[in-house]
Length: 146
View 1 (tube, rainbow, N blue to C red):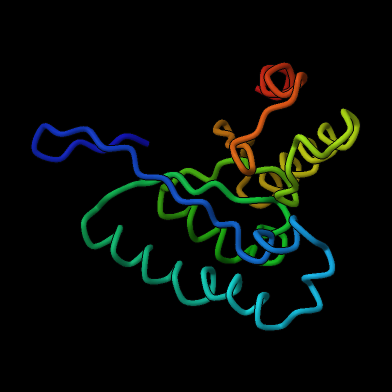
View 2: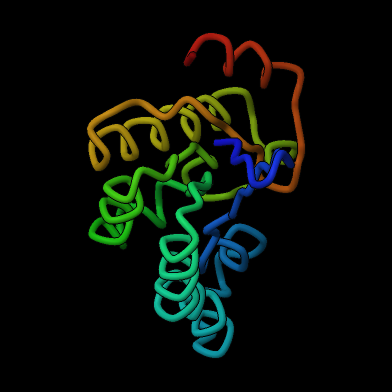
């Protein structure tokens, strides 16, 4: 969501990857509490601070959220949407697209879309690829899912 302050346009976005930053790279990382605590810090401590700051300055932003993160933090995601921030699609599990089959990539798109739509009450319009990767079907999926 663009914000204009004193004539200067600004697009402010956040990736709320949480623990998926580590589990997407290696599922075995889920058994490493130190790594998991680093991922949890963002949604437990960082997000309330960011939301408070954005509210203070009446700034609206876009939050790209994997479906897996949204499922585990439904209240937080509802709060983000209720504060009139955009909740956008960031896959389901944050797995790297170039490592997925076409069927797995479609599943990531569908599951993420389903979760975010259920929690926020509306289908996400924005989408950001994990690790900024695209496959040969990514753009077709984006178009298909709107």
